[in-house]
Length: 200
Length: 99
Image (cartoon, rainbow over all chains, first blue to last red):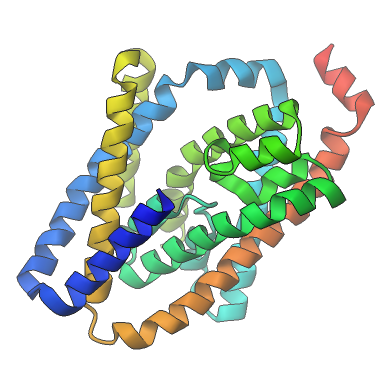
């Protein structure tokens, strides 16, 4: 998926820079609006139909919220520091950090809400988060604790990072990683939209 | 599109997924997500590539992206680690919750 996403982004950039006339660029902006509606609706269906998530959440009780809550707060703190370091507006910085590894959604959402530049930073920073996660999981599991290995993964802990988490941690952490990934996945669009609206 | 309308589509989807969505359509739903995502990423590229100063902006964006990814990761680790020490590693707390 990550390769397909990067190829699509590069193809789009080449078309926008060298081949498409302004009318075509406008057309694709309209297409993106409809694709975003389809994506949001479809993601909603995925979250709603996941009965395992709700069952496991009851089973693990309040403990299940520890990791996702920490990831959300930590990512937002990272966004605040990023805003200060890079002298960027707080709203945009928090929205970028709220992507929590879901590069495709955070990238397209922020392109739609703010513009192509912030959308691309969100896309790239969350792709980088996913790549760095692969390198960090073994180190964190060894030197801190297995639960903390889920922290960099964010929303990717239920899909792309899961196999590495399973390799370097245990079954309990893997189950928490799945729940964490699903919760983060459900939270990201809500968080980005809420922050964008509240800080506007 | 406004942030509110995006949230409304997400919510409507969640209600349909929870109440009415047949399980046999899951694969189709995942494929639709994939197709919509790739169309959106391509459109994002088009919108980005159509900017006249794009070539000059990309280097700057790469550095800012790296800073955001590192800070979000470091922030997550710094908050999650003490929380897991207190709530997930402590056997008394664990037993107390599970009783």
